[in-house]
Length: 333
Image (tube, rainbow, N blue to C red; front, side, top):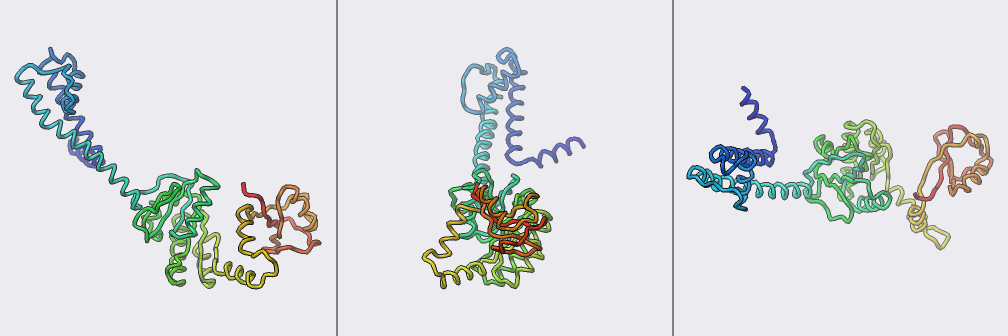
């Protein structure tokens, strides 16, 4: 019964570990046997084991050598079996290393870290997000999940690739989303809008089901699907078509030399949006008064959230309430 259980444990070990264990058992056994056969030439068991390793590795230092016929016969058997076994182990180790590298390249290796960013979908937006993330925090790990790529895309920044459909629990586990910082789901612009949004909804629903609290940013192409994405569990919904449509409109009818595209890009490269709780000393004061106090801190207020309504550039005499939040720009860290 004991031997049967031991055999079960042995065959559950990884192949490379089993092979190493077999090599060690064989070499140590030959070392013990040669010590028992020729105690004069091999005074200790360790001397026998040393000779067995040197012989199996075909190094042959010659500091220990059997002199009897039986001892030399043991040496011949070791050369025929041990050397081949050791060579096979080295070859298997090299093959296992290559296999792990190939699994990593083709997205088959699970990610085991934590507090990482998960990007779903490979496209130009994802590339830009990764670049900006690396600029802001070079130590932040990024995991890319994509079902269309067959190998890790070339990147100048570290990236862990998972190949598969993020709507499947097995793929979510591989990406270790339960320990992730946040998830960004980008829309597949190569598909029709309806198909791309349906996939975004399913992906959001699957991730939310596995992690009830993780922040999820989902990109949706059609406005009519935005509410469904919200119901699926997205914390933030990005509608690029609406945003780009507005920018094109302002570009068509702009009255100044500077176009909105360039202004917004330059602004977002240098500043970031933020919402700030209203300080106790500012409650009840006009918005214009609060602006002056924030400007001294290099924060530029542009509006406020009042009764769940976004008010940009509110009238100067609008008093700020306790539950309001200030919308502002602040320099990037």
